[in-house]
Length: 267
Image (cartoon, rainbow, N blue to C red; front, side, top):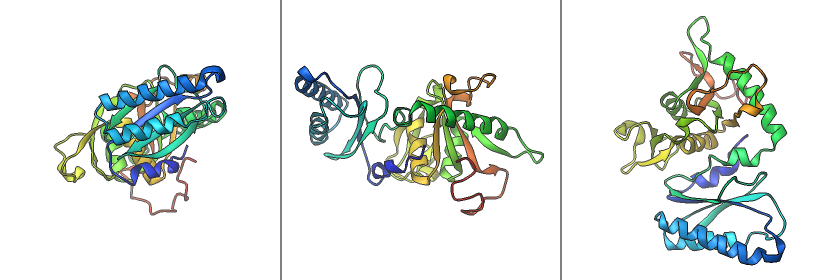
């Protein structure tokens, strides 16, 4: 999945309000239920520190959603008193509606909720087959895949990621990293000033930070779940839940744009 449609979220600084809601409310009491839910979510954002203008913008966007028809759900993103993006979801969010306030928009659930099952199945199987072979070093010790937050952060800064693999149950997804306003301002530790280049770096989840990099560098994103994989495929990969297929290998010379094709190695 290409995340270019998320680029408006990265054209301005945060903090960001991110909300996921199910659609298709029961028509007989849709209006009352929707307004109650919109108020509860905007109040939840306020309790997390969101400013009043952004809470009002989110409430207005949620209250204006179609009440009895439309997609399975919506994701709404707002900052500085303005709704920047409202996108429909192919699958409804599981559990309670989610509302979060943070330095980066909470985009990690989007690829899973916007891609249909047949597409997800095919892409995940292809990606894992490629990943399993690419993580094995060649005769010169080079690999075309990597996993784990430290090496992924390095690859993201270098625009080396061709396809980001995300396993939703992986423990590294919510690991803390540090970010600045620019997508390339990304580091594992707060003390890595040479990478952050920001006077006040902020903590963020690793998955949201790496997805920001993927969206702004044209990388693909593939969600990997056990039910999507062919029989015999090892489980628990990528390690920690985050991995990548690379545009050029570790230990290899950097390829100029177009050498491996405009869409990279895995498309």
